[in-house]
Length: 92
Image (cartoon, rainbow, N blue to C red):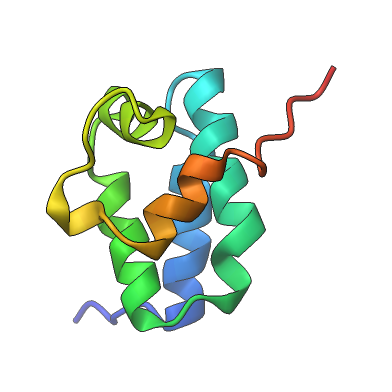
């Protein structure tokens, strides 16, 4: 029998997925967003982020950069926070 992940387990899985997207740019954008905001998330916000992780990186980045319209399921306060891009910390 497979046991369901706890809320904290889901956050840990989301963190890993956010930081292992396949390109450095997506890692910084999506992983940085997770690191900045995840501590205050409730069930609905975590579910939103988990759904976002299922999307193609090029689409997520385009929505965050406002070069493509954000689809209705992803519109709202979390996407608005993502579009601020003030959480991206690029090591030098």
